[in-house]
Amino acid sequence: MREWRDSKGWNGVSSPAGSLPPDKAGLRRNFRRRAATYEQYAQVQRAMAGELLRLAAAPAGTARRILEVGCGTGTLTRELRRLNPTAWLVAVDLDPEVLRRARAALSGDRRTSWLAMDAEALCRGEFELIIANSVFQWFSRPRETLARYHGMLASGGLLAFSAMGPATFRELGQAWREAVLAGESSPPVPVAATFPAGLEWVAMLHQAGFREVCLSRELKVVSYPSVLDFLKAVQGTGAVSPRPRPLTPRQLRRLLMVYHSLFGNGVVPATYELLYLTAGK
Ligand SMILES: C[S@@+](CC[C@H](N)C(=O)[O-])C[C@H]1O[C@@H](n2cnc3c(N)ncnc32)[C@H](O)[C@@H]1O
Image 1 (cartoon, protein in one colour):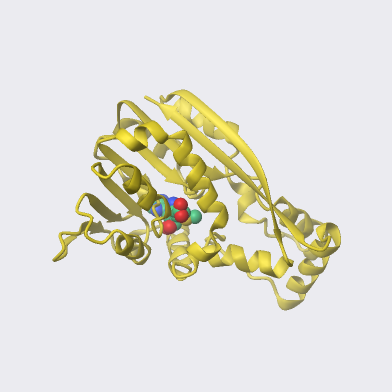
Image 2 (tube, protein in one colour):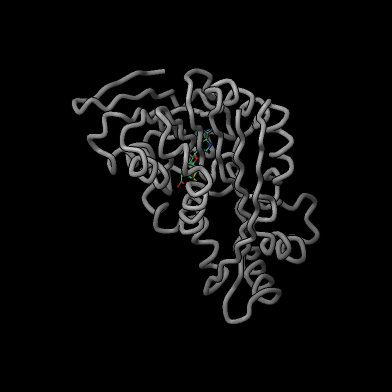
């Protein structure tokens, strides 16, 4: 861990990239590569941030100490600061370059600390609100991490997070299964199909000791002009597998054709399963 403070009083901690396990290093690389285009393509994540803040409006406005996990380029961070100008805000992300962008939009904000590290390794601090927008689906040890967050939440505090669920991009999964890789011994599964389902989150939250657990779920269908536009938009956010297995040009052509023939009707639909969870202590 390296601690630093710059001339404007911006303080932070950064862990060396080499200390991350391969999946986390892959995630970090994906989001870092797309840091410049993330906000342009992240309309769904922006809508999720709005709904999450609606659910956590009371503590977001009044908490004295807030931990934001996976702040990315700062979509939610800026809103949290707008709602609550005085809270001590700790914003954590795997990648320092992504954090730099979040910080630039809040330059001069002395009440925010920025940590570039694996948020699953956090274990210190006490917060009235722990919040994360579209991050927890990437966790590799969600059970243990939720137990740690329970330990870091002040009594009466709230954990609030949104996450993508396993029905996300189900059309892509179906097209993938039905055609493109038929005959291959181990066809790659779209990473979204491996995300925990809403009820799994509920069970993990109870196990970790949280109470008053609430789940809401939305299936949001977004229309794109073509399958390529859809894939480009997803890539533009960096929210892709940490272990990519690129398709050959022939497989890609076939995937596009099958997706279009199964679902295309002037435009091409892609489903996002959006989960919102709140849990108290
Ligand atoms: C889809 S982006 C969401 C960013 C932001 N929360 C927003 O609302 O736009 C997911 C972010 O979570 C971060 N992330 C994923 N796993 C993480 C972890 N274990 N620790 C810290 N950050 C993580 C990624 O680096 C990425 O910036």
